[in-house]
Image (cartoon, rainbow, N blue to C red; front, side):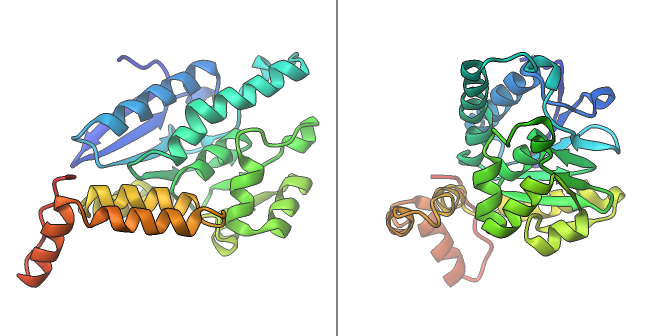
Length: 258
């Protein structure tokens, strides 16, 4: 489908999705969220795509937040539906995608923009990136999973500090907090993202999908059981047999996602 707010490029089984609203600092409006939902859904079902890199257009912003003008007059019920719909159709969709999604944070990642990055399985940031959840300055709290995913990554104390102060973290601080995996120079951001994702897409796709599912349940009562079941299921795949055979034969495996 044609996209108005996204740019898509696929190379070597890696699809890069660029949110292309540079003049608006790539803010998330209804149309952009709908397009992201469609793009992630399509990528997840495309056998030619093994991983996704999500980034923003231009040097200033990954995503500077949600488009506040769209919901400034919402009622309680409309606000709740806004959060529920966004989480179900975009943020949870990304987190539960069977293919790895990496956020390449090229500038401001604020509010819904940071929540979008938090929903991804990995995050890398350029040195000029700034990350924060400033919703309390608007009389709100994060509504797209920010309170939950940030806490899982950095712990309750640091999550409360970032949310309640509305401060922004510099990229190196975010790295120290465990909020991002790597920090790079701006010109090397997508190259680093591609380097990481290129390694991932060479691994057994069903095993990677199983790892995503199990890791997403870490810290829950069902987490260990999910890991045990996913581990066992891997033994029934052709990729497992290929991986073992390649190891024993001292050659590179050829995985087919079966």
